Length: 259
Image (cartoon, rainbow, N blue to C red; front, side):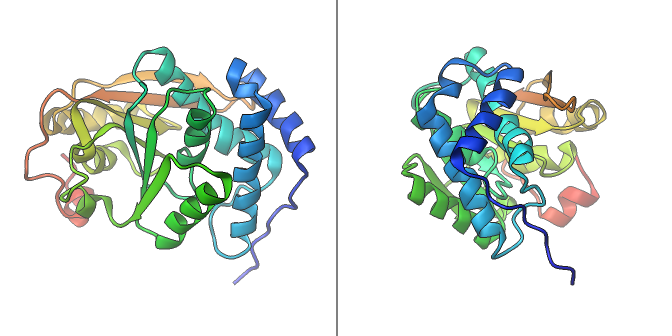
């Protein structure tokens, strides 16, 4: 097996200058550029690289790419949700398929520092090492608003976490027809599912029938562009009815016969 290439860790001053440039170009301003938040975001970056030497967390380790494609790309959708009035103090958020901690960790850092409303983040991933990384990073950086659970979303959604979150997020996890069935059971009636996608039109169309069955209104799609030119979509579903007890199904059924 080829050795994974991990970029060298830059110092905080270099990271801060890079982040401020990219965040500014992306339209993040005000509290998103505060030195205290940037210090925490640097810690997230440094912990990511440290852990990446131990196990496979992400292929993106160069500091400019981390700043744009992991951190800023996590913060923009939350800034949008806040501006839309869909993110509130006291909200409970669940990030499914949390992976290396994006958007979980940057969102929690921005909330902790006052750039976003005061909410809690519960990260879910099927890989225990990834949840361990998120918890370890949160502890090192004093992010007491983050917790996590290792397990399969379709199994956890049948326990105490069912319909207990105001907001559920997912970033680059699965195709929307699969993702929506995994996410819906976690969302409270009156809450939202916010999916962060690179491409969304065809997936949203394919997931429309499932969204209705699972208790959601029709999707609302908002596009934004990263400074590099990459186009992203924030797809929002509002939950108006409880998800039927039959869902989620076993993962093999979700993937083989999407709703």
